[in-house]
Image (cartoon, rainbow, N blue to C red):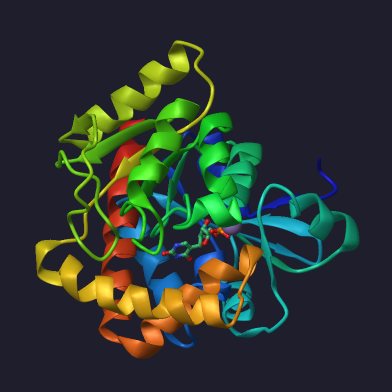
Length: 299
Ligand code: PSU
Ligand code: MN
């Protein structure tokens, strides 16, 4: 493993001395936000984690190496370079074996975080069951990863580009612990509500950490999804987002966008037609990074 896993000195020291570490993904940088906001956000997320007394570890594959704890110049590379792959469980080994550059999705970031010994990971939204799944069979590998790899993922729920009730059904079937943070409703990324209930609720970082710890101590493998709603002040109401999302979905259908290109396409169309969505996205990832740092401290 030493051949392809490169953990930064700072992250290594933090892990060796049991300091809290928060993993951060890179697909959001390379495929989830436009430049330069992607770069600004990635750098400021690291700052937010540090401010809470935890160490950030942004993860990506550069030249076939799994880098855990990117340097600012490497974050800049991931934000600017073209031709960066979007990697999940299936193609992470492909990038490693061929010496390629790739951004890690939630699934791939969980795998790399776990290889490095990091237990907590903050992102914006996880992948899920796509609408019209009965035609496309499109279900994100993120859901299966959550059932396999013992990492606690903090997200603002999932975007309503997805079918949220079906996503929650699959998470239940897979046995993923899904808990709402100070909410009984699963959030839908831009909005605090989704119309779908969440069956577990925690109200403090201590409670979130205790829930994950109980799962691990019982020997139940897999991770946990902590659903943290966007702040009230930055929320965009569901009715407004619904129209924007419908338009993006229609365009994807017309252009016959398929497979792993679907999510990046929809994300970029949403921000193009409704720039305010980007501000909401930045706000919610920041709040997830802060919560992840607090939970990591308790763990
Ligand atoms: N949803 C977002 N922003 C993102 C992603 C999803 O709001 O950046 C990214 C994450 O990296 C997630 C991936 O893991 O898209 C899911 O891709 P897919 O649907 O192809 O599994
Ligand atoms: Mn997919």
